[in-house]
Length: 388
Ligand SMILES: Cc1ncc(COP(=O)(O)O)c(C=O)c1O
Image (tube, rainbow, N blue to C red; front, top):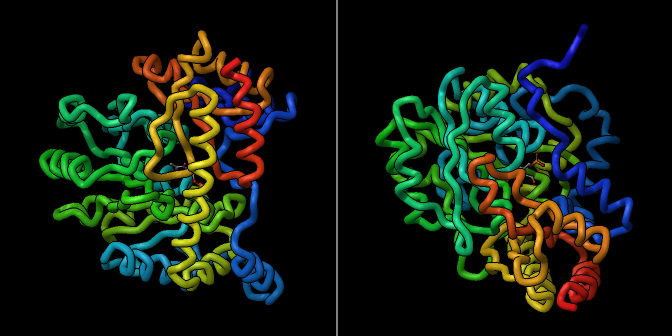
């Protein structure tokens, strides 16, 4: 009998699909998936329309990416992080950051290698590692501050460690790793000759005094790091699925070799619009931050008033909240109860942990605040019912 491969036998339906279905069934306000309910910048959308109509962008794009977009990515990395990226040999455009991570794992990790993953993790990392026949090794962040224990991190490194996936600003905790945290990771990577796959899709979503530091910019790290970004996150066009990997040409070459046989090339009109997006004035990112600061504050007010305890996120558009004062069960039960009985959908974070550490998330829920202010206020009103 024909059957599915063993490789995918442990992959269930993603929690996002499960929660989206439940939210739709109960007409709940969906603060589950990190999907803005507003459009990307009008000028960027117009650039996509022009690209669709100008007769130049409806066939395959160059495999490694549209030249002007690769140039935009390199110019941005120089302007914001002082990184010297060669747009021809140091950038690959991918089908979203999702493919960027997968092609990085396939292109930089061998079967049997270990890859360190910080928990809670973005849900595709572990299946990506498994599909590459490598082994994930888990290091948890601990609530309420969502920091890792330096000794736990140190113990995860050994002679089999090939790579670590770092995500800052961090989904789902909203942490922005400090220079000290990144230095410790960097020192261990240098000591053990380990590659960093740095997922920085929320690089421009940082608040107050937090500062996003790309680990590639630390001494000795450029030659061992690939950095990942996403047009969807930086320009609120998640549906376009355009991402990228940049870094030292020796590493990016490996990623590119995998990429050419994963997707070969990425949506051409969306890349042309992405190139235009990188020409927007720097004030665009400041406005994005200001807009999200208001949303974060609205979300925090709603959660706090409802009796949930949450650490104010320094970055991303997610917040993790501890519901132990208002609900008895675990995170899966809470997300079902909240969606069904309160009318607000959230994501239970235990699927973002290994089995051994899922207990850490038992009393936590992730809320996405990339939603209109009005919807966030409505969600706050509904959440207030939790107190009663
Ligand atoms: C940490 C992280 N990495 C990667 C992705 C995927 O990004 P993309 O939509 O560009 O594939 C997401 C999306 O939510 C994310 O949160």
